[in-house]
Image 1: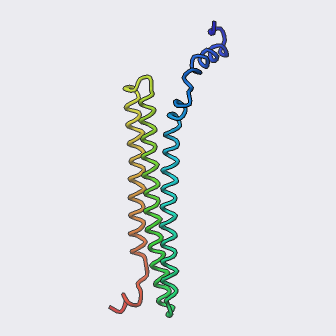
Image 2 (image 1 turned 90 degrees about the horizontal axis):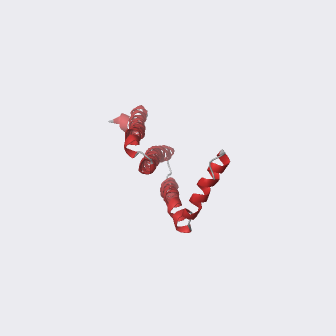
Image 3 (image 1 turned 135 degrees about the vertical axis):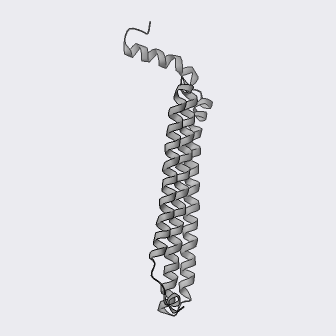
Length: 160
């Protein structure tokens, strides 16, 4: 009955699938997306709290400063801490992204009609994502060490 036209084939698929669309099935299908969004919201909230605490610490430190050189040192320390926090936050975001990507690839592999045939592709995709994360980590570490090596010496360091 439903095999004459593409529309009829689509109608057959829909009519066979409709009984499977229960509220429980819909909730189960959307749960991974909800979990992923919650993980991003938690990460953003934690990073915002950390940034706010660092800013408040800088403000409190600068309040007590009377000497311009001391103010410069406070701002320098704040900038260094900010760069370290940026690198840490970027690494955390990359880690979360790669973890979620790997989870999605695993779900695709599980749902694939021939999971054993998709396994090599899935492994390659996850390995590529892991390599990208490692490369980012390495670049951030090298960038931080380069920036530290290029920082001008302070008067206290020069006097030694």
